[in-house]
Image 1 (cartoon, rainbow, N blue to C red):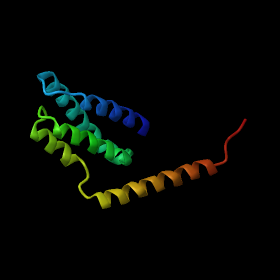
Image 2: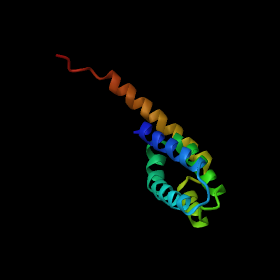
Image 3: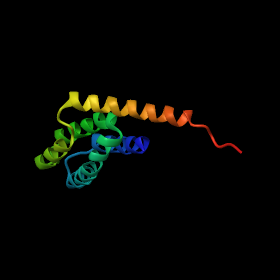
Length: 112
């Protein structure tokens, strides 16, 4: 699932880097902002190391005059504020994943 989120974020990153300030850009920005608002909570839980990419997208959007201030505020509100606590939670999540993978690998397989 992390790979799917990463692929979507890479597309968003490429799109926002090439946006101008036209009305079409504003519509694209609104679409991306709405999608990110739905994705960020899931990314935080499932793929926390991708938050750096989300922050990069938000920074690019923030520098685009077609992005509304309330859109940036809404995005920033979704991103974990305390980086130290977030990093600790992300590290713990990775350790839990590794432990679960090790436990799965240790299970005897039901061979035929």
